[in-house]
Structures are given as structure tokens and as C-alpha cells.
Image (cartoon, rainbow, N blue to C red; front, side, top):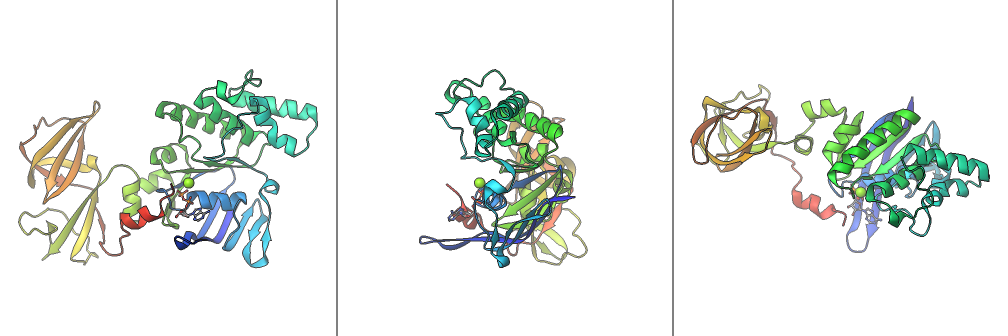
Length: 367
Ligand code: ADP
Ligand code: MG
């Protein structure tokens, strides 16, 4: 069953400084019950805004949002349900714990808003504390706890009302990498116990990959692809998605008489098969660092850098003025300055037309 449905949802902001910004552009989504669904994309792409629209902290400029077959926001009927009536659990990046309340009161807060009786508050709050490994710390104040424990308070508060849908906006971004990994598992465990539908916002692709059943990659307010982590990695819909998931190399090339040369050069050819339906004169070749091999009949170049990465070796080589990275588990033993030949495998071909510049993305960045 679809739990969260977005139909043609758009949100524009108007500011004196920047005029109109389309933060979210005609988004259509069906998130299933019990699914862990991530929004992934660079800063400013519209993740938080989409989540705030679902939560009801923002009203839409256009479209409809439904949760569990009930309308939440419908623009053309001027219908809008406030956040407290949407029955959602939330952890927002800037939604810190309250320093003047102890742990118990922080977690119990949503129940007090619902005017629940004392015994139920005690029972439900203690249950949430147990599930987030905070039991016994109820009397402490947030400042007495570690960063991980403080984040657990926010999680406990989000689950205390047993919501069906949990909205998490970069909940782990303030934690160190080790703790982040531990907390990921804890969130997954909580989901198994309660069968929440989770919408998880992150700019961290590893986090999205590890947690999600499906991922939505966004750029400049637009959906780029919705897919499982594996499909997204193996079959990225476009160059942006390719570059956003996993490590990548992009080589700009020109094609002449069905031969491929590094852009701006007509010397050495990059031997590779051009897809039959690809007829442009310039292209971007995308390959993963682990798909480039040292061979005897490849593109002749030299090793610019060799970096020891403990479980693999990274080589940097130059292809017509463009540096690419090669990652290899078995070390061919080249030193910096050695000549070598490389072959690009598993190439994806992208057009050079219509690329959004990093400058345009930068302009949307949220501080
Ligand atoms: P993300 O969470 O993906 O980093 P946001 O959804 O926060 O991105 O922001 C998307 C775009 O909308 C950005 O360009 C941001 O500057 C703009 N934006 C977000 N909130 C507001 C607001 N309240 N007023 C004006 N512009 C906003
Ligand atoms: Mg954000």
C-alpha cells in the first residue's frame, strides 16, 4: 500500500535578494508502507523543503500530498492540515533537544501535547527510552550526555507516539563517522521493530545506500531518478546520478570518423566501442575507478600519482590533460613517472549538452 503520496508537488520561495526560487519542482512520489525511502542530493537541491511540505511546516505552491489515503495538503482546494494533526514522527537537523528539559521530559513532550494521562506518558516514554538505549538516563539533562545519546533523545521523541511515518532530516550529520555507522544500524533496528515508513534525507550517498529500500536523487528541485540502491549504481539515469553515487571518472572526448579522442586532441585514440545510437561529436565518458585496467594495448600515458589506500591502490593518470583515478586491488607495481597503458571499461556515454554547471548549483546552496 502507498503510505505517502506526492502529486505534482511544487514549492517556490520568494525573497527580495533572489526573487523566485523553485525549491521543489513538480515532484511525483509513491512511498510504500514500511519502506525506508531516502532523498539524496547536494545542498540546496530541495530535500528539506520536500520533507517540510510532507510534515506540513510549509504549504505547497502546487500539487497534493496524501498520507495513508488521507489528504494532507491539496493546493487547488486550499486544503492544508497542520503538522500536529498529520501523525508523523520527525527528527530535523536543526530540531535540537531542549536543554532546559531532562531526557524524560524531552521525550515525553509530544505526549504532553496530546494531553495523555500520567500513567500512559510514563509507560510510553519509558518504552521509547528503552528502544533507543536511553533507559535509566531519564533524569539527566542533554548537556550531560554524549552527542550520540543526544541524537537518540531526538529519535526517542520522534517514535514516542508510535507514528506510522518517520521523517528524518540529516539526523546523523553532527556525529562522527563511527557513531554515524552505529546509529544507522539502530535506526534500521527501530524500523524493524515498529515497521515505520521512513523518509530519510541525506547528502551522504553511503548513508542512503546503507539504509534505503529506494532512493530518490534530486538536483535543482527536480527528480533525477528513483530506484533501489543497486539499480541506481548500476544504471544511473544520467551523468549527475552517475557522479553522485560511488566514485567516478568523467573524460570529455571528441569523436571523429567513429574514433574517440580526449577532447581538444587528435593524437592518441581511446579505444572503445561507441554505442550505435550515439551520434554526437563530443561526449562525456563515465567510468568507475575500479573498471579501468592496466593493459598492454590501451591508452598510453604515465603514472602521475600512486596512493596507498590500505585495502587497494589508487593511481592517477592523465588522459589528454584530464586526470582520472584508477583503483586496483592487485598492485601492478608502477611507480610515479612510469609509463603505462590503460583501458576504460563499462563506459557510460553522456551528452555534453544541457549540463547544469556547478556554479548554478552553488547558487542554491543552503548555508
Ligand atoms: P536541501 O535540504 O536539499 O539542502 P532546501 O530544501 O533546504 O535544500 O533548499 C532548496 C532551495 O530553496 C535552496 O535554494 C534554498 O536556498 C531555498 N529555500 C529553502 N527554504 C527557503 C526559505 N524559507 N526562503 C527562501 N528560500 C528558501
Ligand atoms: Mg536540508
